[in-house]
Length: 78
Image 1 (cartoon, helix red, strand yellow):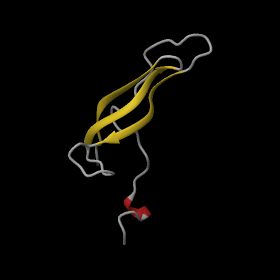
Image 2 (tube, helix red, strand yellow; image 1 turned 135 degrees about the vertical axis):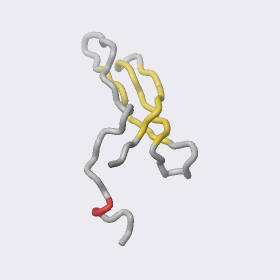
Image 3 (cartoon, rainbow, N blue to C red; image 1 turned 180 degrees about the vertical axis):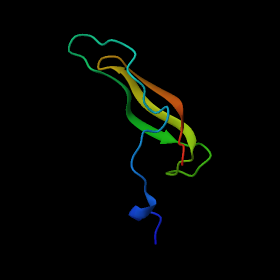
């Protein structure tokens, strides 16, 4: 068996602190987002591998004024 076989996967779930409600009001005709286009990394792991903690990089803001931001994340297991 390979570790990528379906029996090794759990149902998708939100990674803690990877998404938050939009905390700003956008102008007329604009949409806002927080956590758009996320990229995850765990600095102490090889490229392409995640640990249970790390950083998520994402876009935040309204259509016209977007910011590239980051925050820490934690993956919890049962």
